[in-house]
Image (cartoon, rainbow, N blue to C red; front, side, top):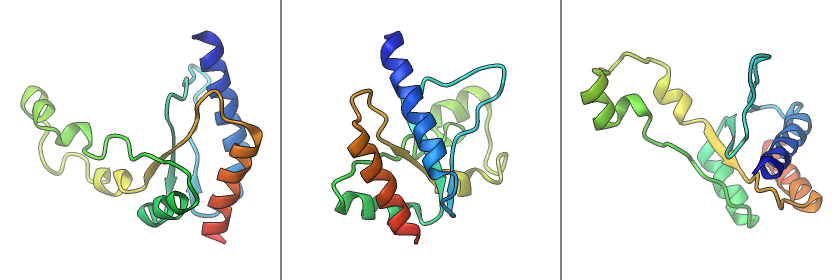
Length: 123
């Protein structure tokens, strides 16, 4: 498991480096006090649904994880008292998140193809 997580982290570092100059794409930020294992590598993008379709046409599977944010889900509203309007930026934020492939077996060629396809979309 440690090796799989390490490979996902390496893939995330590669994405961070490759995508940092692409306008319209925001990458995850880690704090000094912890790190992610990147089971999902979620980017913040403009035109998320159009990018998702573009990547699909290129044979690249992406996922919108948690399209219904936790505070809006019925169980959490009832259990924790979340109310409409408590998180004013939530809807906009959720509409911009897209998860890219981070599987440990992602090859350099596949990685580059994904990055090139994202750059192509925003060019």
